[in-house]
Image: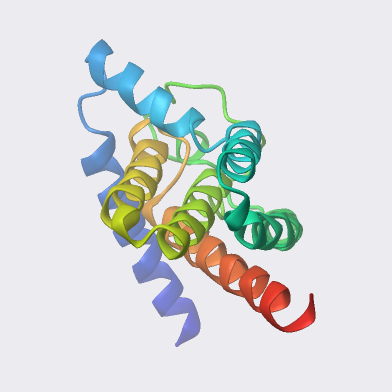
Length: 178
């Protein structure tokens, strides 16, 4: 029963990836999605946090929650990635060539998507007026990882869940323990 479910999800993932990956020869889209993807690198997120704390000291609890959340998110990310060892789409599907060099060998979960949703969650809580734009940014980061050929849709969904969960734990720790 579980094996059948896994096979069905895998087939759905392959079909959705192929639809999204589609026509990737458009250079302007590739550049846009590359930049979106890079905006969720760990260096970018750290810089956002530092600028955020410097510009508005009242947000320091959110920055501390972010540090805790990123420590948790990265730990879980590596633990899951090294145990699941899911091959990237370009290593599994015929005719797929990724548009960027992936940061590591395995696909599940998407760390960039996790980082983006972690940041979007914290920014949304600190600045509710930014909720829609930052969640849209995080969703586009996830989409970019599929479009660039390095993740399946379920990798992105797992990254999203990991980022949101880690942000909530970070906020909880800061609220109740510090």
